[in-house]
Image 1: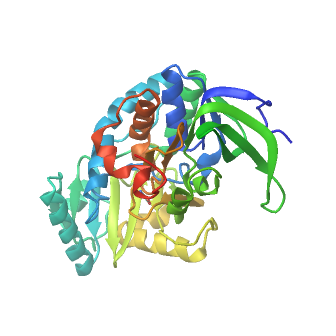
Image 2: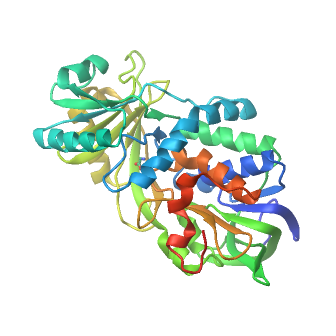
Length: 399
Ligand code: GLY
């Protein structure tokens, strides 16, 4: 059965495998630069991009030992406002960028000590981090509960409405002439040592995958399929093995009529050693996340996760109890052994990879598209990308 929307012997300059935030941003940028682009699997974004919260948080998510990732995330954050201006113009729709910053708060003395250690580390790297006592936190966010002991304001950590952002990328890609194929890439076709295109698969029953005869010819293929990248034949085996799913469950809390907005900015809370975040939208909705679970491709929502997220959120923001539990969801972050993305060329001419964005897919989407466009047009990506080449995982790949 041919995949919908594609005929045998379709051809393009570039095939992008994966229609989440990364693949769609790449397709948009490449088409806007004049390349003929086919995007396969335009719906793949539901695995991660549509489940995300949209935090643009290089400072408040930075961790010990991840300085190279921080530099990359900071570069992406510094370009995000300009990207949004361009995207909103191209798509003709808003993406809900919010610039109010992020307030990290601590619940008990252990949480306060942990936050103080992280804040000292972040300040040692020159990050903008303003320490606050509990009262100052409540002045900024009056609905915070009396048990919040203190916190830290990261003024440069913004957020975007991830669903509006992905919708705008899709619209901009369409407007730029990207063709989309529903289905997914089963294999990269290689002839005489270089990329010749892709072979498409279509779904069988009970999760079995049936390979169709359909193929798309293209001299360049970009694998940007998140956790599904690992299932694409033709990608070097070490790279396939480097991407694993890390499950994240999150909730959407709708604002009841008559209640004023309960948050003015993103709040991240350390609560009894656990980490929870609350990201407000313009209409008062709050995205509450997220678990971090090593459970393979499982996307079920569990009672325990819903309980823990709500319990921790109510510990710091008691008014959550009044809100409507509008949605529960589970997504799969594409994680790598060093928590960094994998972006660059492989040793198969014409085969590029852009996956493994783990916790930073929304933030890094525009910067990744810039890097891939640079590679497609014979330029060098920004130097911050050097530690994140495929070569670090695959002896068979080159940077
Ligand atoms: N960046 C948020 C998360 O991974 O849950």
